[in-house]
Length: 148
Image 1 (cartoon, rainbow, N blue to C red):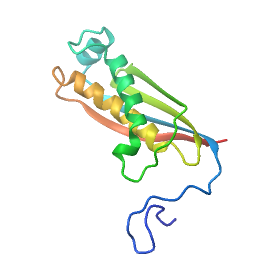
Image 2 (spheres, rainbow, N blue to C red; image 1 turned 60 degrees about the horizontal axis):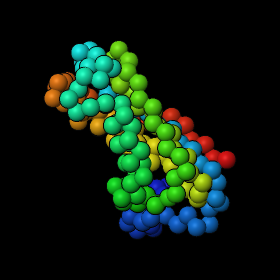
Image 3 (tube, helix red, strand yellow; image 1 turned 135 degrees about the vertical axis):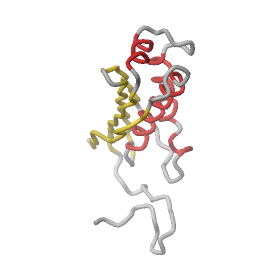
């Protein structure tokens, strides 16, 4: 098993030094899912919720969150993000969110991709909570990491 990268020789949390790492194009993709009742899926697809367009609001929330990851996760670097894309789509069990974050820099963008997908799904939850008490978020994961 690899050693933890964010601890020093005494086990104390540290932000790792990436200054010697090469600048590269880094891409990370993440996905997650929120389970919704069938009626809630219909309301979302027909844009019938009082809070507005669930897909549009959730997409913007995820993009905004990815840009703030360094403020939310204590040991994340404040990085330059070149692109953030979030796709949301309904299926028979709920809504999936798939995010892609691209950065040209010295460290990866996995946390930004995960944060984007997670907050997009949390926003779906917030917008649907008045009509669906059975919701649950699951399967949040990194699905791809690329360095070029």
